[in-house]
Image (tube, rainbow, N blue to C red; front, top):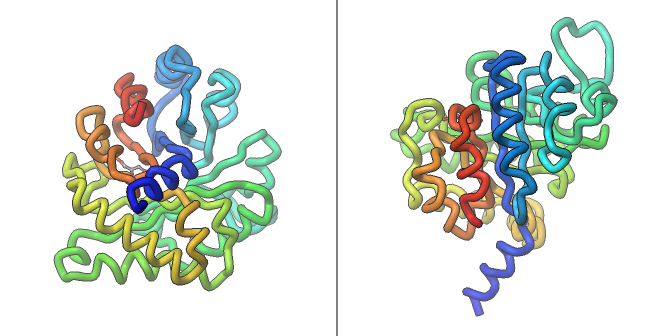
Length: 257
Ligand code: 13P
């Protein structure tokens, strides 16, 4: 019975693969990325979401096959106003986007965004009708000190405190030590944290939320390691950085196919 239940949950949670381009690309390289992404479409049994830098959101969206969705890499927590350099969910919706990434470790650790700010942004983005890829993850020193569970739970608790609608959230577990380092989490390491997060959702939200919420893994995902990670029942997809700029990204999209 438990085997068929986990099979069922895989069916309930559509595999989702995001490509976070970070602050990379120009029109010429984006043309190349669009070329291999469109050539690989249509994608079956998998949702594909790419996230170009803000100046290229519309450029990429207009060139990409309709089946490839576009997410912003960030947004602010209010609709408009005197917030130089920011963009609002209302604006993202206005240009036809449905997704935004919030709480990426680079936003948290390079730009100093707090748990409460990331939660407020998430709440506002959802209220404005967007879905959110919400990133969590521990730093190396936190893992080595045995705080992995605490750190991930603390980052998620900020969403619980604001009573966010989990049906609009994909959780991306991205251990900071694995991002851009070539040191991918082992399947056992990723599986352990994904299971903790699902237990957290069961306790803090409901068993249904735990069953239905997609938890994806990010951090040095490549065409070589994605198949093994993608076999795990609690890994519902990936958030890919460096490898999402290369044709291999199509292999990662198809990791479960
Ligand atoms: P890399 O895949 O380059 O390690 O980056 C992961 C990431 O930060 C995706 O958001």
